[in-house]
Length: 461
Image 1: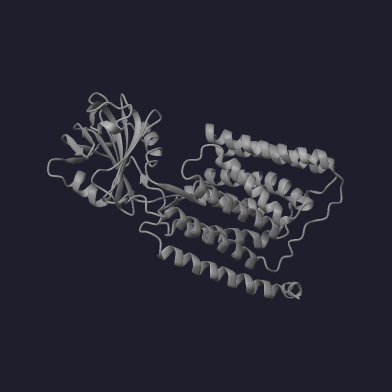
Image 2 (image 1 turned 90 degrees about the vertical axis):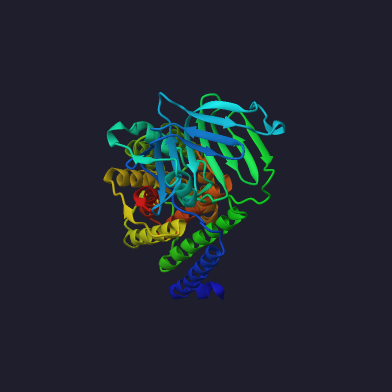
């Protein structure tokens, strides 16, 4: 009886609309009970506004003292007009000074009363601390630096890694961060002897680098302020409800489509096809590794993914199967493009929790990313998912390909929490696979994946 009821498109549309509304309400409930600064888009460091110290500047903590000489560069990191981080670089001819004085029982490989030459510090800072410790302190003068004197290449390289000290998580392509509290000391230091290390001071004091790890309880603080307790569970629930909202929305907008698998009119060898499926996944893994290690241009990366799409075309030709088997047709395209835009908008607004203030539209960026996504999905969805769907079931095919792509994505160059990052990648992969299954057109999931990957780089918050 239920099957006959849900055979009516109007009934399916009504049920999926109710599901989408329920998921939106769940999203709202999770959001309003979440901790302050639930998540913001990535902080914007820019070398276009750079200052320098007019005189010496000193900052002392319980176990660390840093001192920068006059003429040190100060590059603020902004969010909504407020400074939440600063990058401070000492002049090449006059390094700063770093002094560490850790308790003897917790020093590890670091000697007591260590003094080191200080090259730079990236300080995650609360806006109140910025005003009192740097901008408005009585013995420090902050001046605007002339643009012609700035080492722009060095600054841009440092700023790309300058956000790592913040507790961050990926939410559907957007790198969100939990902002520091006034009680938290969180900074990344580059010195001559100790190299690059992170210093964290809260109820726990931590020093982390590639060569040493020191952690001990703060003698005077018993409450932890950063990151907020239970934030991983909150973000996981929010991510889950957001992807369910998007899935319900896709089901509602495609409720009139049948989404049936096309018939296979040709013949193919199951053993060779299984080998081809494994080769396709290995090839995808190699391309992800190449992208993370060498950061090629998007158009060049698209050309490499095109090689995989060509191999799928050869397989179709040899098996005497028409190209419409992978969904290369006009069917569902007219409704699929608006569907991709709507779903991308929902995920973007949900992932950033605020409206953007601008967009940086670069044709080569948009074209390269969308082309890469289209050709990638032609290999992963049009071939791997479609074959598994015929052999097993469409639902299992969506799940298996999404899990495989999540493992491939997280195996190279991923920074951050693996659980939250994996949930984010898996959710987006499930959504793209479901869109392909509903529209039966390979161009629609490729377009959706491309837009979802382009938006985090194009939007300004």
